[in-house]
Structures are given as structure tokens and as C-alpha cells.
Image 1 (cartoon, helix red, strand yellow):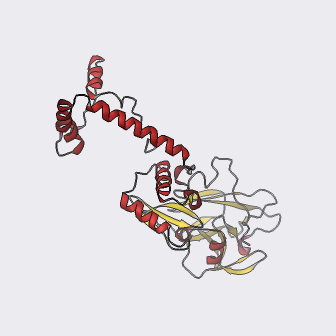
Image 2 (cartoon, helix red, strand yellow; image 1 turned 45 degrees about the horizontal axis):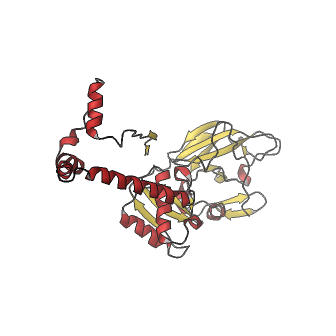
Image 3 (cartoon, one colour; image 1 turned 120 degrees about the vertical axis):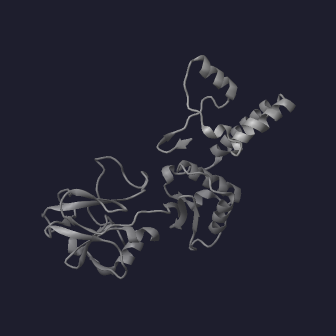
Length: 304
């Protein structure tokens, strides 16, 4: 199973503890004993040290039967998992339509999604609350927290959002190639390809700030509009809109993250310019291209 950045492998799980202990002693191995193994106040220590010996004494073959039942349950679970739709890896957004309509199937798909993200299973009450909110109107707000994450809904998908997120940091940066961590993500500036729409560099520097409400900007070929509308049309989830960096100079917005280069920030034809790339903290590999040669967005996306 996932464990932090790696995997936990238990190849001797089917071996009895006394067998492993005897093999380790025969091989002259040294090991660290978990101190809670002998603490009766801990449930697993109580089961191993007091309850299981009594069960073995009463029913000598009972433990093997329990193991066979566990193996049968695991095989059944694997078979059912193979029948479920695939879930995105690493906590990427999950399409609600892929959950199906049956509540039990929905619960199974959600558990698989959590497991693929390396998350512990939510308490039953939290999962039932999530299923209840999913059954509400599609445009109803959905927010169910458990552990370190919160499940949100936007645009037909479910998202895993960290509950404890670093606040964005306003700053001033040079308009030159470089990378800047803004507390809530990484803003990269690179030289734009020849002929591609790009961010102008002649101000020399710009302020990086974040949405405060009421911002207006001018888009090439569209004239004036609001930042709110741009973010809505770009499909940015509401909880991310206050975390998109705004590059500003001379009282105007030059660019909105890597979503759009405004009229005030667009480099003149033939003039050198910059391409932008914004990677929010926690963005999964399925949402962003990875690798040093991944292209950067140098022009505004289609907002119509």
C-alpha cells in the first residue's frame, strides 16, 4: 500500500509471528521491537498477547479458518474492484458521471479514488455525508472534510482540496526568465517562442498580487471585462480563484497566471516577450505536463 513517497511491502504477512521470530534468530538478525507491542492498553497488543492465545487454546484450527476467510474476502474485493471504472491517479479530479447511480457502487468508486490518492479511508459517517450531498442538485455546494482534505464539486467533477493550505504571497518580480514560489504555487517565466503572443518585458518589473474583488482588465479583441468572468470562463474552481497570481504594472493587470495575457501586457509584434507557467501547490501530474521540456502557455486560452 502507499506509504508517504514510497510503498509498504509485507511479503511475510501470511507467516505466523513465531515463525518470523525463529527465522530472525536463526539468521542472527537484529531488529527494533515496537514498544507498544507489549502494551495491553493498545488494542492490537491486547489481541495478540491475551485474546489470540485463548482462542488458539479453545479452537486450535480457528486461526487458519480466519485466514482462509480473509483470503476469500480479499479475492472477492479484487474481483469487484476490477469491475469498477478506473479512477484517476494521484488525487486528480474524479468525474461524477463515472460514479454510476447505485449508492454502493458510488461508495466503492470513492474509496478507490481515495486509495489512489494515498489517503486513509474516511469514517463511514463522512462517506455517507458525501454520498448524501452528491445526491443533491448538481449546482449545490458540496464540501465534505475528513482528515487533511476536503472533497469539493465543480464542473461535473470532484476535487480533493488540502484543508491547510499556505496563503499566497504578494511580491514584486523582474520581468525576466526565472521561477518564483508565491507561497501557494510556482510561477515560471521563460522566453516565448518567436511569433507567439507573449508578455512584454519593457516595464522591467511587475507586482504580483492576488484577487481582492472588483478587478477589471482588457483582453485583446474583447475589450474590458471582469476578472471574475475570466476565471469563470476558464473553468477555475471557486476555491482556486483567490490563488491565481495577477501580474500588474502601472495600475493595470498584465496577465492572469498563465490563463490570459491582457492587452496591457501583450508584447508588440516582433518584440521579445515571456511565456508564463503557473503550477499551484498540490497540482497532480494529470493536470500539468511534467518534464523540463514541457511547453509553457504563451498566449491566452480561448475564453469564448
